[in-house]
Length: 594
Ligand SMILES: [Zn+2]
Ligand SMILES: [Zn+2]
Image (cartoon, rainbow, N blue to C red; front, side, top):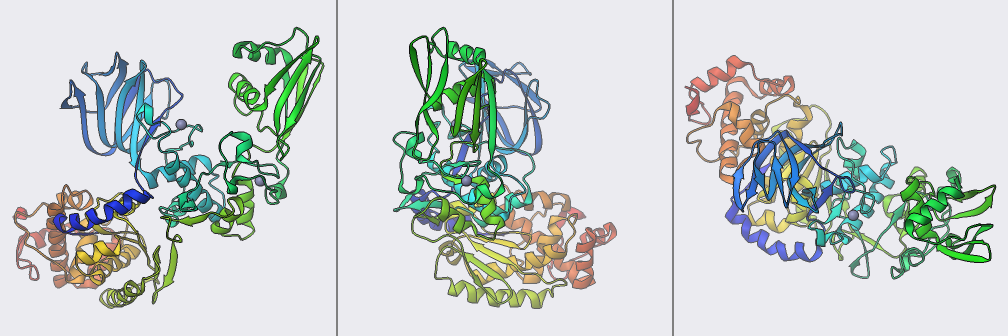
Protein backbone atom coordinates (compact mmCIF):
# COMPACT_ATOMS: atom_id res chain seq x y z
CA UNK A 1 0.00 0.00 0.00
CA UNK A 2 1.19 3.50 -0.73
CA UNK A 3 0.08 6.29 1.44
CA UNK A 4 0.41 10.01 0.89
CA UNK A 5 -0.21 13.13 2.88
CA UNK A 6 -3.88 13.79 3.30
CA UNK A 7 -3.58 17.48 2.38
CA UNK A 8 -2.13 16.61 -1.00
CA UNK A 9 -4.96 14.30 -1.72
CA UNK A 10 -7.79 16.47 -0.51
CA UNK A 11 -7.27 18.72 -3.52
CA UNK A 12 -7.45 15.85 -5.95
CA UNK A 13 -10.29 14.08 -4.19
CA UNK A 14 -12.30 17.29 -4.18
CA UNK A 15 -11.96 17.50 -7.91
CA UNK A 16 -12.97 13.92 -8.45
CA UNK A 17 -15.93 14.29 -6.13
CA UNK A 18 -18.27 16.06 -8.55
CA UNK A 19 -17.50 13.39 -11.11
CA UNK A 20 -18.11 10.56 -8.65
CA UNK A 21 -21.37 12.08 -7.46
CA UNK A 22 -22.79 12.56 -10.92
CA UNK A 23 -22.13 9.03 -12.05
CA UNK A 24 -22.24 7.30 -8.69
CA UNK A 25 -20.90 4.01 -9.99
CA UNK A 26 -19.93 3.34 -6.39
CA UNK A 27 -21.32 4.46 -3.05
CA UNK A 28 -21.93 3.21 0.42
CA UNK A 29 -25.24 1.34 0.66
CA UNK A 30 -27.33 0.82 3.77
CA UNK A 31 -29.20 -2.49 3.84
CA UNK A 32 -31.76 -3.80 6.28
CA UNK A 33 -30.76 -7.29 7.35
CA UNK A 34 -33.25 -9.82 8.74
CA UNK A 35 -35.93 -8.02 6.73
CA UNK A 36 -39.30 -9.71 6.82
CA UNK A 37 -38.33 -11.40 10.09
CA UNK A 38 -39.40 -10.30 13.53
CA UNK A 39 -36.32 -9.61 15.64
CA UNK A 40 -37.37 -9.39 19.27
CA UNK A 41 -33.93 -10.06 20.73
CA UNK A 42 -30.54 -9.76 19.09
CA UNK A 43 -27.26 -11.21 20.24
CA UNK A 44 -24.23 -9.10 19.23
CA UNK A 45 -20.65 -10.45 19.31
CA UNK A 46 -17.45 -8.96 17.88
CA UNK A 47 -16.23 -11.03 14.92
CA UNK A 48 -12.85 -9.52 14.18
CA UNK A 49 -11.55 -5.97 14.31
CA UNK A 50 -14.00 -3.52 15.86
CA UNK A 51 -13.47 0.17 15.28
CA UNK A 52 -16.01 1.70 17.60
CA UNK A 53 -19.07 0.77 19.62
CA UNK A 54 -21.34 3.43 20.97
CA UNK A 55 -24.90 4.13 21.78
CA UNK A 56 -26.81 7.32 21.53
CA UNK A 57 -28.74 7.99 24.73
CA UNK A 58 -30.49 11.33 24.59
CA UNK A 59 -28.04 12.03 21.78
CA UNK A 60 -25.08 11.77 24.15
CA UNK A 61 -22.75 9.21 22.61
CA UNK A 62 -21.59 6.65 25.15
CA UNK A 63 -19.31 3.70 24.65
CA UNK A 64 -20.73 0.18 24.87
CA UNK A 65 -18.96 -3.16 25.00
CA UNK A 66 -19.90 -6.28 23.09
CA UNK A 67 -20.97 -9.04 23.43
CA UNK A 68 -24.43 -7.94 24.49
CA UNK A 69 -28.05 -8.67 23.79
CA UNK A 70 -30.29 -5.91 22.48
CA UNK A 71 -34.07 -5.74 22.60
CA UNK A 72 -36.54 -3.22 21.25
CA UNK A 73 -38.08 -1.07 23.96
CA UNK A 74 -40.42 1.83 23.23
CA UNK A 75 -38.75 3.95 20.58
CA UNK A 76 -35.27 2.74 21.49
CA UNK A 77 -33.11 -0.24 22.27
CA UNK A 78 -32.36 -1.75 25.66
CA UNK A 79 -29.11 -3.64 26.19
CA UNK A 80 -28.42 -6.60 28.46
CA UNK A 81 -26.33 -4.23 30.61
CA UNK A 82 -29.58 -2.42 31.40
CA UNK A 83 -28.60 0.66 29.42
CA UNK A 84 -31.23 2.11 27.14
CA UNK A 85 -30.39 4.01 23.99
CA UNK A 86 -32.20 5.59 21.09
CA UNK A 87 -29.83 3.72 18.84
CA UNK A 88 -26.65 1.69 18.94
CA UNK A 89 -23.93 2.22 16.34
CA UNK A 90 -21.16 -0.30 15.84
CA UNK A 91 -18.29 0.06 13.39
CA UNK A 92 -16.37 -3.08 12.49
CA UNK A 93 -16.91 -6.82 12.15
CA UNK A 94 -19.74 -8.28 14.21
CA UNK A 95 -21.95 -11.34 14.33
CA UNK A 96 -25.65 -10.57 14.76
CA UNK A 97 -27.80 -13.45 15.91
CA UNK A 98 -31.55 -13.06 16.42
CA UNK A 99 -32.91 -15.14 19.28
CA UNK A 100 -33.91 -18.61 18.15
CA UNK A 101 -31.51 -18.71 15.19
CA UNK A 102 -28.39 -20.80 15.25
CA UNK A 103 -26.21 -19.01 12.71
CA UNK A 104 -26.95 -15.31 12.45
CA UNK A 105 -24.99 -13.01 10.17
CA UNK A 106 -21.34 -12.02 10.38
CA UNK A 107 -20.16 -8.98 8.42
CA UNK A 108 -18.05 -5.84 8.64
CA UNK A 109 -19.36 -2.33 8.15
CA UNK A 110 -21.24 0.25 10.14
CA UNK A 111 -24.12 -1.40 12.03
CA UNK A 112 -27.07 0.48 13.47
CA UNK A 113 -29.65 -1.03 15.79
CA UNK A 114 -32.85 0.98 16.06
CA UNK A 115 -36.47 0.29 16.86
CA UNK A 116 -39.23 0.88 14.33
CA UNK A 117 -42.90 -0.01 14.96
CA UNK A 118 -41.97 -1.93 18.10
CA UNK A 119 -39.50 -4.15 16.25
CA UNK A 120 -35.75 -4.12 16.10
CA UNK A 121 -34.36 -2.86 12.82
CA UNK A 122 -30.81 -3.94 12.00
CA UNK A 123 -29.08 -1.77 9.40
CA UNK A 124 -25.68 -2.37 7.84
CA UNK A 125 -23.83 0.24 5.79
CA UNK A 126 -21.28 -1.34 3.49
CA UNK A 127 -19.28 -0.69 0.31
CA UNK A 128 -21.35 -1.05 -2.83
CA UNK A 129 -18.86 -3.52 -4.31
CA UNK A 130 -19.18 -5.63 -1.15
CA UNK A 131 -22.96 -5.45 -1.52
CA UNK A 132 -22.65 -6.71 -5.12
CA UNK A 133 -20.60 -9.69 -3.90
CA UNK A 134 -23.20 -10.59 -1.23
CA UNK A 135 -26.11 -10.19 -3.67
CA UNK A 136 -24.35 -12.17 -6.41
CA UNK A 137 -23.69 -14.87 -3.82
CA UNK A 138 -27.39 -14.83 -2.89
CA UNK A 139 -28.88 -14.64 -6.37
CA UNK A 140 -26.54 -16.66 -8.61
CA UNK A 141 -25.33 -20.23 -8.60
CA UNK A 142 -21.78 -20.55 -7.30
CA UNK A 143 -20.97 -23.21 -9.90
CA UNK A 144 -21.93 -21.00 -12.81
CA UNK A 145 -19.33 -20.20 -15.47
CA UNK A 146 -17.35 -17.00 -14.83
CA UNK A 147 -18.81 -15.09 -17.79
CA UNK A 148 -22.44 -15.48 -16.69
CA UNK A 149 -21.40 -14.61 -13.13
CA UNK A 150 -19.80 -11.44 -14.53
CA UNK A 151 -22.96 -10.63 -16.51
CA UNK A 152 -25.01 -11.13 -13.34
CA UNK A 153 -22.58 -8.97 -11.33
CA UNK A 154 -23.22 -6.10 -13.76
CA UNK A 155 -27.00 -6.64 -13.56
CA UNK A 156 -27.01 -6.97 -9.75
CA UNK A 157 -24.93 -3.76 -9.46
CA UNK A 158 -27.15 -1.89 -11.93
CA UNK A 159 -30.25 -2.98 -10.01
CA UNK A 160 -28.77 -1.90 -6.67
CA UNK A 161 -27.68 1.56 -7.81
CA UNK A 162 -30.89 2.13 -9.76
CA UNK A 163 -33.10 1.08 -6.82
CA UNK A 164 -31.07 2.64 -4.01
CA UNK A 165 -34.01 4.88 -3.03
CA UNK A 166 -36.46 2.01 -2.78
CA UNK A 167 -36.62 2.02 1.03
CA UNK A 168 -35.66 5.68 1.45
CA UNK A 169 -38.72 6.50 3.55
CA UNK A 170 -37.76 3.72 5.97
CA UNK A 171 -34.25 5.08 6.40
CA UNK A 172 -32.24 2.64 4.33
CA UNK A 173 -31.44 1.83 0.69
CA UNK A 174 -32.22 -1.84 0.12
CA UNK A 175 -33.51 -4.81 2.07
CA UNK A 176 -31.76 -8.18 2.16
CA UNK A 177 -34.70 -10.26 0.86
CA UNK A 178 -35.88 -11.07 -2.66
CA UNK A 179 -38.04 -7.93 -2.48
CA UNK A 180 -34.82 -6.14 -3.44
CA UNK A 181 -32.04 -8.70 -3.89
CA UNK A 182 -31.35 -11.67 -1.63
CA UNK A 183 -28.04 -11.31 0.20
CA UNK A 184 -26.04 -14.30 1.30
CA UNK A 185 -23.54 -13.52 4.06
CA UNK A 186 -20.67 -15.75 5.10
CA UNK A 187 -17.83 -16.84 2.92
CA UNK A 188 -18.04 -15.67 -0.70
CA UNK A 189 -16.82 -18.22 -3.29
CA UNK A 190 -13.66 -17.18 -5.17
CA UNK A 191 -15.50 -17.17 -8.51
CA UNK A 192 -18.05 -14.69 -7.15
CA UNK A 193 -15.30 -12.39 -5.81
CA UNK A 194 -13.53 -12.56 -9.15
CA UNK A 195 -16.67 -11.75 -11.15
CA UNK A 196 -17.28 -8.69 -8.94
CA UNK A 197 -13.66 -7.49 -9.17
CA UNK A 198 -13.42 -7.90 -12.92
CA UNK A 199 -16.56 -5.84 -13.42
CA UNK A 200 -15.82 -3.28 -10.66
CA UNK A 201 -18.23 -0.36 -10.96
CA UNK A 202 -19.69 -1.55 -14.28
CA UNK A 203 -23.42 -1.10 -14.88
CA UNK A 204 -25.72 -1.09 -17.91
CA UNK A 205 -26.52 2.18 -19.64
CA UNK A 206 -29.06 3.20 -22.22
CA UNK A 207 -29.25 6.61 -23.90
CA UNK A 208 -26.94 8.24 -21.36
CA UNK A 209 -28.89 6.92 -18.37
CA UNK A 210 -28.44 3.88 -16.19
CA UNK A 211 -30.71 1.11 -17.45
CA UNK A 212 -33.67 -0.40 -15.58
CA UNK A 213 -32.91 -4.08 -15.23
CA UNK A 214 -34.61 -7.27 -14.09
CA UNK A 215 -33.61 -10.90 -14.00
CA UNK A 216 -35.35 -14.20 -13.39
CA UNK A 217 -34.25 -17.77 -12.81
CA UNK A 218 -35.62 -19.31 -16.01
CA UNK A 219 -37.83 -17.69 -18.65
CA UNK A 220 -38.97 -21.07 -19.98
CA UNK A 221 -38.01 -20.22 -23.57
CA UNK A 222 -39.58 -16.81 -24.01
CA UNK A 223 -38.84 -13.73 -21.92
CA UNK A 224 -41.67 -11.46 -20.82
CA UNK A 225 -42.28 -7.82 -21.70
CA UNK A 226 -41.72 -5.68 -18.59
CA UNK A 227 -44.89 -3.64 -19.20
CA UNK A 228 -46.99 -6.83 -19.07
CA UNK A 229 -45.77 -7.55 -15.55
CA UNK A 230 -45.45 -4.04 -14.15
CA UNK A 231 -47.67 -1.45 -15.83
CA UNK A 232 -45.68 1.71 -16.41
CA UNK A 233 -42.35 -0.09 -16.63
CA UNK A 234 -41.26 -0.23 -20.24
CA UNK A 235 -38.01 0.00 -22.12
CA UNK A 236 -37.00 -1.02 -25.63
CA UNK A 237 -34.50 -3.47 -24.13
CA UNK A 238 -37.11 -5.13 -21.88
CA UNK A 239 -39.37 -6.51 -24.60
CA UNK A 240 -40.39 -10.13 -24.91
CA UNK A 241 -38.15 -12.31 -27.06
CA UNK A 242 -37.43 -15.95 -27.75
CA UNK A 243 -34.67 -17.45 -25.60
CA UNK A 244 -33.09 -20.42 -27.34
CA UNK A 245 -30.49 -20.85 -24.57
CA UNK A 246 -32.39 -21.81 -21.43
CA UNK A 247 -34.43 -24.48 -23.19
CA UNK A 248 -31.29 -26.39 -24.19
CA UNK A 249 -31.09 -27.84 -20.71
CA UNK A 250 -34.70 -28.96 -20.46
CA UNK A 251 -37.85 -26.94 -20.43
CA UNK A 252 -38.07 -26.00 -16.75
CA UNK A 253 -41.55 -27.49 -16.44
CA UNK A 254 -43.46 -27.74 -13.20
CA UNK A 255 -46.77 -29.00 -11.83
CA UNK A 256 -48.79 -27.84 -8.89
CA UNK A 257 -51.97 -29.29 -7.44
CA UNK A 258 -53.93 -27.15 -5.04
CA UNK A 259 -57.22 -28.33 -3.51
CA UNK A 260 -60.09 -25.85 -4.06
CA UNK A 261 -60.67 -25.85 -0.31
CA UNK A 262 -57.27 -24.25 0.21
CA UNK A 263 -57.93 -21.78 -2.61
CA UNK A 264 -61.19 -20.83 -0.90
CA UNK A 265 -59.29 -20.19 2.30
CA UNK A 266 -56.85 -17.93 0.48
CA UNK A 267 -59.73 -16.06 -1.23
CA UNK A 268 -61.39 -15.54 2.13
CA UNK A 269 -58.27 -14.16 3.75
CA UNK A 270 -57.74 -11.81 0.79
CA UNK A 271 -61.36 -10.66 1.03
CA UNK A 272 -62.26 -11.95 -2.46
CA UNK A 273 -65.77 -13.33 -2.88
CA UNK A 274 -66.20 -16.75 -4.56
CA UNK A 275 -69.50 -18.39 -5.55
CA UNK A 276 -70.65 -21.33 -3.39
CA UNK A 277 -69.88 -23.79 -6.16
CA UNK A 278 -67.00 -23.48 -8.63
CA UNK A 279 -67.43 -25.44 -11.87
CA UNK A 280 -64.49 -24.17 -13.89
CA UNK A 281 -61.29 -22.19 -13.68
CA UNK A 282 -59.66 -20.90 -16.84
CA UNK A 283 -57.17 -18.38 -18.11
CA UNK A 284 -59.12 -15.77 -20.06
CA UNK A 285 -56.28 -13.39 -20.92
CA UNK A 286 -52.65 -14.03 -21.69
CA UNK A 287 -49.67 -11.78 -22.42
CA UNK A 288 -48.36 -11.74 -26.00
CA UNK A 289 -45.60 -14.05 -24.77
CA UNK A 290 -48.20 -16.54 -23.47
CA UNK A 291 -48.17 -16.02 -19.70
CA UNK A 292 -51.46 -15.96 -17.81
CA UNK A 293 -52.73 -12.46 -17.12
CA UNK A 294 -56.34 -12.88 -16.04
CA UNK A 295 -58.15 -15.96 -14.71
CA UNK A 296 -61.82 -16.56 -14.24
CA UNK A 297 -63.43 -18.70 -11.55
CA UNK A 298 -66.99 -19.55 -12.55
CA UNK A 299 -69.92 -21.45 -11.04
CA UNK A 300 -73.52 -21.01 -9.86
CA UNK A 301 -74.04 -18.48 -12.63
CA UNK A 302 -71.27 -16.16 -11.41
CA UNK A 303 -67.87 -15.30 -12.87
CA UNK A 304 -65.07 -14.00 -10.69
CA UNK A 305 -62.00 -12.53 -12.44
CA UNK A 306 -58.61 -12.66 -10.67
CA UNK A 307 -55.34 -11.39 -12.09
CA UNK A 308 -52.64 -14.04 -12.38
CA UNK A 309 -50.18 -11.88 -10.46
CA UNK A 310 -52.40 -11.43 -7.43
CA UNK A 311 -53.44 -15.10 -7.45
CA UNK A 312 -49.81 -16.24 -7.50
CA UNK A 313 -48.84 -13.79 -4.78
CA UNK A 314 -51.78 -14.77 -2.55
CA UNK A 315 -51.25 -18.53 -3.01
CA UNK A 316 -47.51 -18.30 -2.49
CA UNK A 317 -47.88 -16.19 0.60
CA UNK A 318 -50.46 -18.52 2.12
CA UNK A 319 -49.06 -21.89 1.02
CA UNK A 320 -45.34 -21.23 0.78
CA UNK A 321 -43.27 -19.53 -1.86
CA UNK A 322 -42.73 -21.31 -5.15
CA UNK A 323 -46.09 -23.08 -5.15
CA UNK A 324 -46.72 -21.40 -8.52
CA UNK A 325 -43.23 -20.92 -9.96
CA UNK A 326 -44.29 -18.60 -12.79
CA UNK A 327 -47.38 -17.19 -14.53
CA UNK A 328 -46.76 -19.35 -17.59
CA UNK A 329 -49.23 -22.22 -17.12
CA UNK A 330 -52.48 -23.90 -18.03
CA UNK A 331 -54.97 -24.65 -15.29
CA UNK A 332 -57.84 -27.11 -14.98
CA UNK A 333 -60.26 -28.00 -12.23
CA UNK A 334 -61.11 -31.63 -11.58
CA UNK A 335 -62.28 -33.53 -8.49
CA UNK A 336 -62.07 -30.37 -6.43
CA UNK A 337 -58.37 -29.85 -7.20
CA UNK A 338 -56.72 -27.14 -9.32
CA UNK A 339 -54.11 -28.65 -11.61
CA UNK A 340 -51.44 -26.26 -12.85
CA UNK A 341 -49.00 -27.26 -15.59
CA UNK A 342 -46.39 -24.58 -16.01
CA UNK A 343 -42.98 -23.66 -17.33
CA UNK A 344 -40.24 -21.26 -16.34
CA UNK A 345 -39.28 -19.96 -12.92
CA UNK A 346 -39.96 -16.34 -12.04
CA UNK A 347 -41.44 -13.38 -13.92
CA UNK A 348 -39.32 -13.92 -17.02
CA UNK A 349 -38.39 -10.26 -17.52
CA UNK A 350 -34.84 -9.26 -18.46
CA UNK A 351 -31.91 -11.59 -18.02
CA UNK A 352 -32.74 -15.30 -17.87
CA UNK A 353 -30.22 -16.81 -15.45
CA UNK A 354 -30.49 -20.32 -16.90
CA UNK A 355 -30.03 -18.97 -20.43
CA UNK A 356 -27.11 -16.77 -19.41
CA UNK A 357 -25.33 -19.73 -17.79
CA UNK A 358 -25.89 -21.76 -20.96
CA UNK A 359 -24.52 -18.95 -23.17
CA UNK A 360 -21.42 -18.76 -20.97
CA UNK A 361 -21.00 -22.55 -21.03
CA UNK A 362 -21.06 -22.35 -24.83
CA UNK A 363 -18.27 -19.79 -24.86
CA UNK A 364 -20.02 -16.41 -24.90
CA UNK A 365 -18.52 -13.50 -22.99
CA UNK A 366 -20.36 -11.45 -20.35
CA UNK A 367 -20.77 -8.55 -22.81
CA UNK A 368 -22.47 -10.80 -25.37
CA UNK A 369 -24.80 -12.23 -22.74
CA UNK A 370 -25.80 -8.72 -21.65
CA UNK A 371 -26.42 -7.55 -25.22
CA UNK A 372 -28.57 -10.60 -25.88
CA UNK A 373 -30.80 -10.04 -22.84
CA UNK A 374 -30.72 -6.22 -22.88
CA UNK A 375 -30.34 -5.34 -26.58
CA UNK A 376 -29.16 -1.80 -27.24
CA UNK A 377 -27.67 -1.21 -23.78
CA UNK A 378 -23.98 -0.59 -23.10
CA UNK A 379 -21.70 -1.71 -20.30
CA UNK A 380 -19.72 1.10 -18.65
CA UNK A 381 -18.54 2.42 -15.31
CA UNK A 382 -19.95 5.79 -16.38
CA UNK A 383 -22.37 6.79 -19.11
CA UNK A 384 -19.38 7.75 -21.26
CA UNK A 385 -16.84 4.94 -21.03
CA UNK A 386 -16.96 1.44 -22.49
CA UNK A 387 -16.19 -0.48 -19.33
CA UNK A 388 -12.94 -2.22 -18.50
CA UNK A 389 -10.48 -2.66 -21.36
CA UNK A 390 -7.11 -4.31 -21.16
CA UNK A 391 -3.80 -3.36 -22.72
CA UNK A 392 -0.70 -5.49 -22.58
CA UNK A 393 2.46 -4.27 -20.94
CA UNK A 394 5.73 -6.22 -21.06
CA UNK A 395 4.83 -9.14 -18.77
CA UNK A 396 1.84 -7.46 -17.09
CA UNK A 397 -1.70 -6.34 -17.95
CA UNK A 398 -3.24 -2.93 -17.51
CA UNK A 399 -7.00 -2.52 -17.11
CA UNK A 400 -8.52 0.93 -17.53
CA UNK A 401 -11.84 2.49 -18.48
CA UNK A 402 -10.18 5.31 -20.38
CA UNK A 403 -8.60 4.99 -23.79
CA UNK A 404 -5.46 7.08 -23.21
CA UNK A 405 -3.30 4.84 -21.07
CA UNK A 406 -0.09 5.01 -23.12
CA UNK A 407 1.82 6.95 -20.42
CA UNK A 408 0.85 4.53 -17.68
CA UNK A 409 1.75 1.58 -19.86
CA UNK A 410 5.21 3.01 -20.52
CA UNK A 411 5.81 3.86 -16.86
CA UNK A 412 4.57 0.44 -15.86
CA UNK A 413 7.00 -1.28 -18.21
CA UNK A 414 9.90 0.61 -16.62
CA UNK A 415 8.64 -0.10 -13.08
CA UNK A 416 8.02 -3.82 -13.72
CA UNK A 417 11.51 -4.12 -15.23
CA UNK A 418 13.05 -2.43 -12.18
CA UNK A 419 11.03 -4.52 -9.75
CA UNK A 420 12.21 -7.76 -11.33
CA UNK A 421 15.82 -6.58 -11.35
CA UNK A 422 15.66 -5.61 -7.67
CA UNK A 423 13.75 -8.70 -6.60
CA UNK A 424 14.25 -11.48 -9.19
CA UNK A 425 11.03 -13.54 -9.22
CA UNK A 426 11.26 -17.20 -8.38
CA UNK A 427 8.00 -18.14 -10.08
CA UNK A 428 6.53 -16.56 -13.23
CA UNK A 429 4.15 -13.81 -12.17
CA UNK A 430 1.81 -11.77 -14.36
CA UNK A 431 0.61 -8.72 -12.41
CA UNK A 432 -2.73 -7.20 -13.27
CA UNK A 433 -3.03 -3.47 -12.73
CA UNK A 434 -6.49 -1.95 -12.52
CA UNK A 435 -6.77 1.83 -12.47
CA UNK A 436 -10.10 2.82 -10.94
CA UNK A 437 -11.61 5.87 -12.68
CA UNK A 438 -12.76 7.55 -9.45
CA UNK A 439 -11.48 7.71 -5.88
CA UNK A 440 -14.90 6.61 -4.67
CA UNK A 441 -14.78 3.45 -6.77
CA UNK A 442 -11.23 2.84 -5.50
CA UNK A 443 -12.54 3.04 -1.94
CA UNK A 444 -15.60 0.88 -2.59
CA UNK A 445 -13.54 -1.75 -4.41
CA UNK A 446 -10.55 -2.01 -2.05
CA UNK A 447 -12.23 -1.01 1.25
CA UNK A 448 -9.20 1.27 1.76
CA UNK A 449 -9.47 4.91 2.79
CA UNK A 450 -9.35 7.45 -0.01
CA UNK A 451 -5.92 8.75 1.04
CA UNK A 452 -4.22 5.56 -0.05
CA UNK A 453 -2.75 5.66 -3.55
CA UNK A 454 -2.71 1.97 -4.40
CA UNK A 455 -3.53 -1.39 -2.94
CA UNK A 456 -2.29 -4.86 -3.88
CA UNK A 457 -4.05 -8.20 -3.39
CA UNK A 458 -2.02 -11.14 -4.61
CA UNK A 459 -1.05 -10.29 -8.19
CA UNK A 460 -3.82 -7.69 -8.51
CA UNK A 461 -2.92 -4.02 -8.10
CA UNK A 462 -5.59 -1.35 -7.67
CA UNK A 463 -4.63 2.24 -8.46
CA UNK A 464 -6.26 5.58 -7.77
CA UNK A 465 -7.23 7.65 -10.84
CA UNK A 466 -4.34 9.06 -12.83
CA UNK A 467 -5.10 12.65 -11.74
CA UNK A 468 -4.71 11.61 -8.10
CA UNK A 469 -1.49 9.67 -8.69
CA UNK A 470 0.28 12.37 -10.68
CA UNK A 471 -0.67 15.03 -8.15
CA UNK A 472 0.90 13.00 -5.37
CA UNK A 473 4.19 12.16 -7.02
CA UNK A 474 5.29 9.73 -9.63
CA UNK A 475 3.13 6.98 -11.03
CA UNK A 476 6.26 5.03 -11.81
CA UNK A 477 7.36 5.10 -8.16
CA UNK A 478 3.90 3.95 -7.04
CA UNK A 479 3.91 1.16 -9.59
CA UNK A 480 7.42 0.03 -8.58
CA UNK A 481 6.27 -0.20 -4.96
CA UNK A 482 3.15 -2.22 -5.88
CA UNK A 483 4.98 -4.50 -8.32
CA UNK A 484 7.45 -5.29 -5.54
CA UNK A 485 4.47 -6.15 -3.35
CA UNK A 486 3.25 -8.57 -6.02
CA UNK A 487 6.69 -10.24 -6.08
CA UNK A 488 6.92 -10.40 -2.29
CA UNK A 489 3.37 -11.76 -2.04
CA UNK A 490 4.05 -14.35 -4.75
CA UNK A 491 6.43 -16.14 -2.40
CA UNK A 492 5.64 -14.95 1.14
CA UNK A 493 3.96 -17.41 3.47
CA UNK A 494 0.55 -16.36 4.71
CA UNK A 495 2.07 -16.37 8.21
CA UNK A 496 4.82 -13.87 7.36
CA UNK A 497 4.28 -10.73 9.46
CA UNK A 498 3.06 -7.61 7.71
CA UNK A 499 6.06 -5.53 8.86
CA UNK A 500 8.38 -7.92 7.04
CA UNK A 501 6.38 -7.87 3.81
CA UNK A 502 5.92 -4.09 3.81
CA UNK A 503 9.44 -3.54 5.09
CA UNK A 504 11.12 -5.61 2.38
CA UNK A 505 9.20 -3.67 -0.29
CA UNK A 506 10.21 -0.32 1.24
CA UNK A 507 13.83 -1.35 1.68
CA UNK A 508 14.23 -2.92 -1.76
CA UNK A 509 12.59 0.08 -3.43
CA UNK A 510 15.05 2.27 -1.52
CA UNK A 511 12.16 4.37 -0.39
CA UNK A 512 12.66 4.43 3.37
CA UNK A 513 11.58 7.93 4.30
CA UNK A 514 11.16 9.92 7.42
CA UNK A 515 12.54 9.37 10.88
CA UNK A 516 11.28 6.72 13.20
CA UNK A 517 10.82 8.99 16.22
CA UNK A 518 9.52 7.07 19.21
CA UNK A 519 9.44 3.82 17.28
CA UNK A 520 6.70 1.28 17.78
CA UNK A 521 7.13 -2.20 19.14
CA UNK A 522 7.37 -4.83 16.45
CA UNK A 523 4.20 -6.33 17.86
CA UNK A 524 2.33 -3.06 17.26
CA UNK A 525 3.79 -2.52 13.79
CA UNK A 526 1.53 -5.03 12.07
CA UNK A 527 -1.57 -3.49 13.54
CA UNK A 528 -0.42 0.01 12.54
CA UNK A 529 0.27 -1.20 9.01
CA UNK A 530 -2.96 -3.15 8.63
CA UNK A 531 -5.27 -0.51 10.09
CA UNK A 532 -3.52 2.85 10.44
CA UNK A 533 -5.57 5.39 12.37
CA UNK A 534 -4.26 8.14 10.12
CA UNK A 535 -1.80 8.87 7.36
CA UNK A 536 0.97 10.02 9.70
CA UNK A 537 0.87 6.79 11.70
CA UNK A 538 0.83 4.81 8.49
CA UNK A 539 3.93 6.64 7.21
CA UNK A 540 5.69 6.12 10.51
CA UNK A 541 4.90 2.39 10.50
CA UNK A 542 6.04 2.02 6.90
CA UNK A 543 9.28 3.86 7.57
CA UNK A 544 10.04 1.74 10.59
CA UNK A 545 9.19 -1.54 8.83
CA UNK A 546 11.46 -0.43 5.98
CA UNK A 547 14.33 0.30 8.35
CA UNK A 548 13.98 -3.01 10.13
CA UNK A 549 13.85 -4.96 6.88
CA UNK A 550 16.70 -2.86 5.47
CA UNK A 551 18.89 -3.72 8.44
CA UNK A 552 18.03 -7.41 8.01
CA UNK A 553 18.93 -7.29 4.32
CA UNK A 554 22.21 -5.49 5.07
CA UNK A 555 23.24 -7.99 7.65
CA UNK A 556 21.92 -11.29 6.26
CA UNK A 557 21.46 -10.58 2.57
CA UNK A 558 18.24 -10.41 0.51
CA UNK A 559 18.29 -14.17 -0.18
CA UNK A 560 18.16 -15.02 3.52
CA UNK A 561 15.38 -12.50 4.15
CA UNK A 562 13.38 -13.95 1.27
CA UNK A 563 13.79 -17.37 2.79
CA UNK A 564 12.34 -16.04 6.06
CA UNK A 565 9.43 -14.57 4.06
CA UNK A 566 8.75 -18.00 2.60
CA UNK A 567 9.13 -19.68 5.97
CA UNK A 568 6.68 -17.20 7.47
CA UNK A 569 8.87 -15.77 10.24
CA UNK A 570 12.22 -14.31 11.17
CA UNK A 571 13.95 -16.33 13.91
CA UNK A 572 13.20 -14.56 17.23
CA UNK A 573 16.92 -14.27 18.09
CA UNK A 574 17.58 -12.38 14.87
CA UNK A 575 14.90 -9.81 15.57
CA UNK A 576 16.20 -9.33 19.14
CA UNK A 577 19.78 -8.77 17.96
CA UNK A 578 18.55 -6.39 15.32
CA UNK A 579 16.61 -4.39 17.85
CA UNK A 580 19.60 -4.14 20.18
CA UNK A 581 22.27 -3.00 17.76
CA UNK A 582 22.44 0.06 15.53
CA UNK A 583 20.84 -0.50 12.15
CA UNK A 584 23.46 0.20 9.49
CA UNK A 585 21.20 1.30 6.71
CA UNK A 586 18.69 3.06 8.85
CA UNK A 587 21.32 4.60 11.07
CA UNK A 588 18.87 4.63 13.94
CA UNK A 589 17.80 2.15 16.54
CA UNK A 590 14.14 1.47 17.09
CA UNK A 591 14.04 2.92 20.58
CA UNK A 592 11.43 0.71 22.19
CA UNK A 593 13.53 -2.43 21.91
CA UNK A 594 16.26 -1.56 24.38
ZN1 LIG B 1 -36.64 -4.38 -0.45
ZN1 LIG C 1 -34.60 -18.21 -20.79
